[in-house]
Length: 130
Image 1 (cartoon, rainbow, N blue to C red):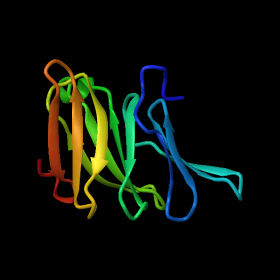
Image 2 (tube, rainbow, N blue to C red):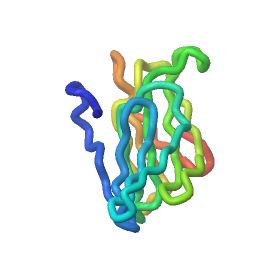
Image 3 (cartoon, rainbow, N blue to C red):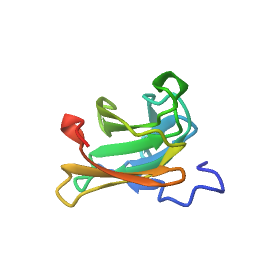
Image 4 (cartoon, rainbow, N blue to C red):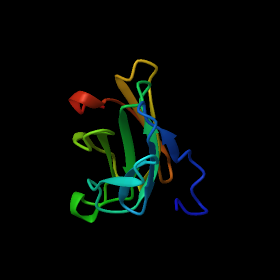
């Protein structure tokens, strides 16, 4: 999972001790004790990066460009426990979102677009404002 070209961190523990990771276009939350998985299905194409906020309750996953959005990729910000999408951040026209990371207070999210030239956006993710 994640592919050989993906060197970004891609496995995290949530605040409840569940394992959060991704494969293809699906965010996965694994409860090891219950031997059960839950799935976040808000993406339309392959996910390339994942980050959890400092509270480890909110995930951000970035994907490949989406044809329906005019070749622009997006980031989904979602609740790890409920799997509810909290925000969808449409990036500028780049091939994919290569990296995501939350600020220390969790209010901001940095995203890195992968194309020449690369772009970095810092979002107030809850308001969908870059």
